[in-house]
Length: 143
Image (cartoon, rainbow, N blue to C red):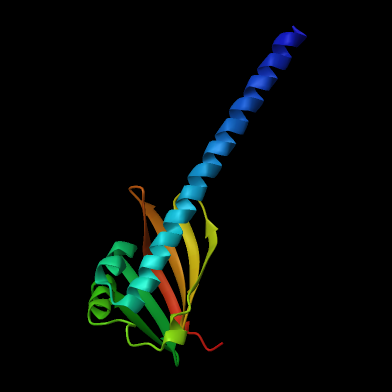
């Protein structure tokens, strides 16, 4: 009887360990895709690459900024169009120094911050196995 209980406990432990490892691998792959999406967004802007920008954004994405108490908004089509017209291509090279940090992630959502001449807080969602940006809150980076 004890042997059956120990065997059952061992099997359960191994199953849980395997699931944890598998879940961890999925989250690691997701983190790579999250980073890729964030880089498509910020590098796409500086390269004037509208296809990278469009790849990164959900069709209903809204980008917001508060300045002098006023809220301004850009939607996906305006963001892609601005990128197509050159985006940050003419920015000084020192502004092209980019930092990307995944702040938090779960199975289907993530928060990322990108830092360059701007600070962008990105909210991403996993839609049909693809990570896309659904919300951006941004400001100038004065540091």
